[in-house]
Length: 352
Image 1 (cartoon, rainbow, N blue to C red):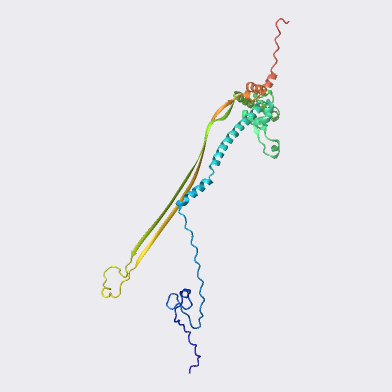
Image 2: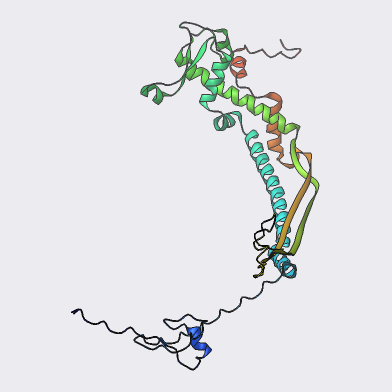
C-alpha cells in the first residue's frame, strides 16, 4: 500500500444562482474577470470575498481657452496703458532743454576763465600757465645745435629733474645776445639759472599775446537759432486663428492580396471580414502679435555770433588786454633796451 498521506480536496469555486449587481461586476473580485458571465457572483471555498473598491472621482474639466481674436482688444489696451508716451515726450523735451542750457553755461564759464587769464600781467600769466619743463622743451627745440635736453636716469638725477646742457664745452653762440648774455660761455648753470627764466617769460608772453589778440577780435559763441522736437508712438496688434479638420476613411480588404481567388473559390461557407480605418486630423492654430514703437527726433539749427569785449570786461581789463595784443609785452626786448645808450634830450632853441 502507498503510505503517502492523502491530499486535501481542491477548493471548489462555484457561482451563485442569482445574478450579482453591476457594481460588484465593476469591482473585480479575485478569481473573476469583470465583464464575463458570472463575474459578479459569489466565491465559494477558501478564498475570501474582497471589499468593493471606492468609486474614482472624475477630474474637473478645464475651462476652454478663449480665442485670440476675442482677447486681442484686452491685451492691446494693457499694452497701451504700460507705454508711458507722455512721460517719453516730457523726458525728450527736458533732455533737449538741459543740454542747450548746459552748453551755454559751459561756454560762458570758459570765456570768463579766458578773460581772467589774459587780463593778468606777463609774470602772473607765465607763473600759472607755463612750467619750467615747457621752457626747457622750447629751448631744446629752437637751438638743437647748441642745447640738448638731458632726462634723469639714476636716483640722483631723478631727484634733480631734467636739465638743459650744452652740446660742446667753451661755446658761446650768438643767440645769447637775445637774452643779454653776449660773449659768455654756454654752461649748464648759465642755461638753468639765467637763460631758462627768460625763455619761460618769453613763451608766456607769446601765448598771452596770441590769446589777447583773439579776445580783442571777438569771442565767438555758438547759440541755437531754431529747432524742432517731434515724438510719435505706433501700436500694432494682429490676431490670427485657424482651425483645420481632415477626415479620411480607408476601407480594407480581408484576405485578398491581389491576383486570382482559386484558393477560396470552393469555400464560401465563411464570409470575409472587411476592415474600415477612419482617421481624423484636427489642427488648431492661434497667434497674437503686439508691438509698440516709440520714435523721438530733435533738430537744432546752430548759429555763431560774436560777443563784444565791452560787455564782458571793464575798461581797465580791456585796456590791459589791448596792450598785450598790440605790444606783445615780450620780456626779451627789455635787456636789449637796457643795453642801448640813452639818447640825449635835444635842448630847446635859444639855449646856450
